[in-house]
Amino acid sequence: MENKEGYGRRDAYGEQGMGREPGGTETRLRTIGEGIRIVGSVIGLVVLVVGVFFAIRLFGAIYATLSDPTPKEQIVEKWAQFVGGDELNVVVQDRTYRPARQVAIFCLGLGTFLLVWVTLGIAAAGAKIISLTASDREAIKRILTHAFGAQRKPLRQRDKE
Image (cartoon, helix red, strand yellow):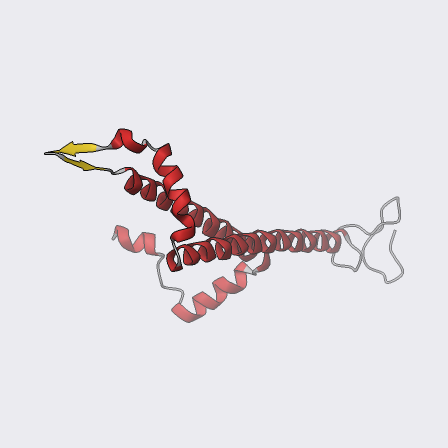
């Protein structure tokens, strides 16, 4: 059965078959694909904003601690007791060395580093999701081929030679 315009076929339910006609299956699949890309971009944007929010909070806390460390002394003392307190004391030639505070500061610094690393990783993951869902990869490949020429080899192949 042909439709009024004379191209394409309709199935038993009156739907147009595969083809480039408006309302065809290909058009519907393209629309669904664009919808999925939009949802992916929104998810990536949310992840990126969450990562940036926590990064700003962490860097603000680090700045506040570096500007005035006195409010954080209680935290360092609690950690010093947690990591061993006076049990870590070392006696050398009638002198007592108390490394508990240094160990506590190291543990707090390592924890802060890991939190910053995870936070920036979350922000980078959001940016990667946006990049993968919102960009036209073929257009980027054409631009790069035009800019650098078709004869350029990928970095991995150049290293083998």
